[in-house]
Image 1: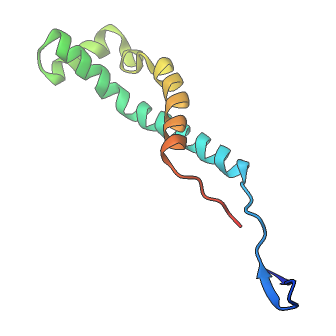
Image 2 (image 1 turned 180 degrees about the vertical axis):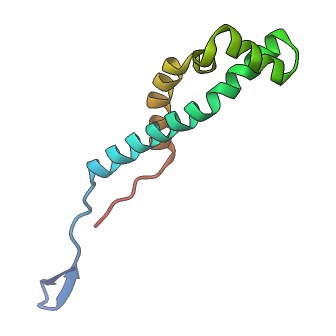
Length: 105
């Protein structure tokens, strides 16, 4: 707060104009996209198994064995690049459009 003098000679407190920190926003957008990518990397193997299970039927354990036998470890992470691309674009923009900005003084 800054002391200022009004037209009547009475001291008043003046506030500085709000400052928007774009670096904070950029950091939050990057962290939102990164967090979504980490979460996707953790859950994608089970998602791949779920989709294969829905298409081919069987049990979860047999589906996991089939993926491991046919494609190896890489089979559990099939589609990771498109998912990352989607998360890096959509999650930060969703967060940015639904979270009200904070203006620091």
